Amino acid sequence: MPRFLLRHRVVVEPYLGDSAYGKRYGPARADVPALVAETVRQVRAPDGRQVTSTAQVIAEPGLVCPVGSRLTLPTGRTTTALSVDHHTAPGLPVPACTEVMCE
Image (tube, rainbow, N blue to C red; front, side, top):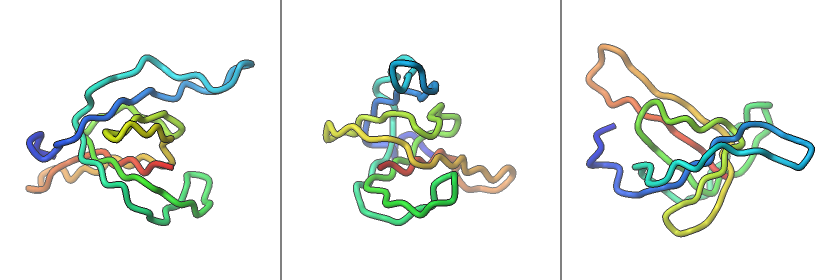
């Protein structure tokens, strides 16, 4: 994805797993270039359930954002990653990107 199209900035705190004290997150990566759309869509979670996504984030390929990661959107709203897809098309003239569907 060309960087000039990624007009928003988000903060990503990668999900590390659960501990005795609750969910654990890695260090926050601030100012991640992204394109954010806060619209309601039905998506399928990794476990197969159909869930509602209220924000979609498109970022550069290689974004480290496992399912369950915490994201802070440009509006200041904090949300959780429901699904993460890495889109690539080697050899084709189309942009590669990472798509995150958020709660």
